[in-house]
Length: 157
Image (cartoon, rainbow, N blue to C red; front, side, top):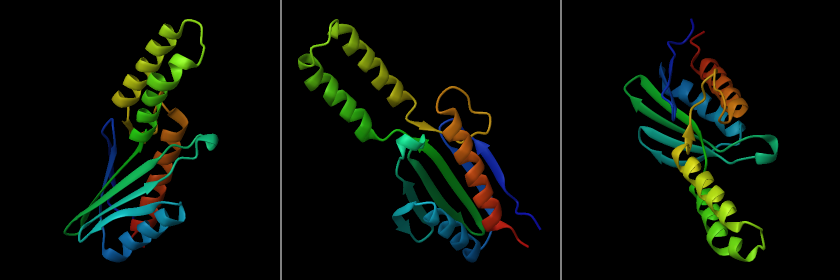
């Protein structure tokens, strides 16, 4: 019998809700660990997992949050731009740019500030299958992968 899986794309994150037991959650968690996720926080009824970026493979950091409410599991996942990258760009803009020797450094400075503002505004993005423009392929790929992992783990057959 297929799992009662509902997925809502909320703009900045995707929320999956499914009914299951501890063994099914363990199966899902192990599947995430095989995909190179790391457990960063673990409480009685909640877990946080993260996966690092592989930018040369067009892959962004992914974060997963799992919460339990009885037999109901809420699983939030999203791709993100880490704060370290945003702060690093800001640091390079303020410290290195004045000494880089660019012509029209003022325009480069304004462009860097706009990129930082966009990164802060779009720091988290969901895994919707019809994603367009901002990180289209990684969002679609991770959305499909997470849905497949959830269906495989919480399948009741």
